[in-house]
Length: 238
Ligand code: BTN
Image 1: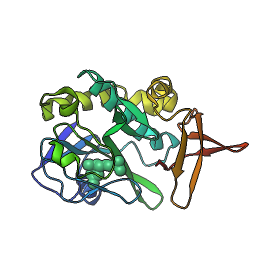
Image 2 (image 1 turned 90 degrees about the vertical axis):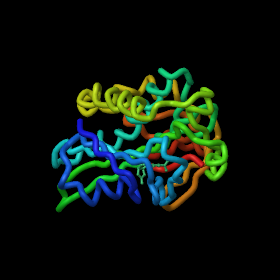
Image 3 (image 1 turned 135 degrees about the horizontal axis):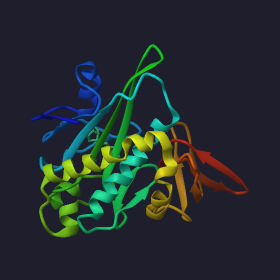
């Protein structure tokens, strides 16, 4: 694993994408000032101060596309939850990969892949974690959000948190690629905060409301709408 620290950048994901060829597998780009952070589904990710985490892991697992790569964000959400739990909170996961504490978002993940002529050049696994936010910065975020320092009432050392997190991530990374979502399914389900709730799922082209009845062995969301069951591979719970 290699770390690359940037004082300031528009987006660590964008930077990783644009400079992908320069970096080897398992390089982590992180910054203290992200000026144009990107979120899922064309949203933005606000800058909420320098002592938070804005990072992208560059992965180059080979040039063949594998189904399991789409579950890497769920694996990362479990790893972030574990790391946070070791600090004394009990995080939950909102499908597919938001990490929440007491119903408020503390971390978001955005994966982007780079293809060159049908071949996989790399995967960029970007994540933002609210570690040390001031209350007034949190209120700028348009959805209920929290930060680890607020939950624990103490400051968190960013670099130690980041290195603990990445060590955990790479400890089981090879096994995850081999075994897929089943490696984390039990824990993911235990942390899932959306199950048995009536929810609205937004995909690129539609919104569907129904009862969240489960997650498949491949990490897809099972939603019961009237008498039929729908399965979502991608999307967002509103
Ligand atoms: C989401 O919840 O919508 C995903 C947010 C992902 C934010 C991170 S911050 C570091 C990396 N660089 C970006 O531009 N976005 C991700």
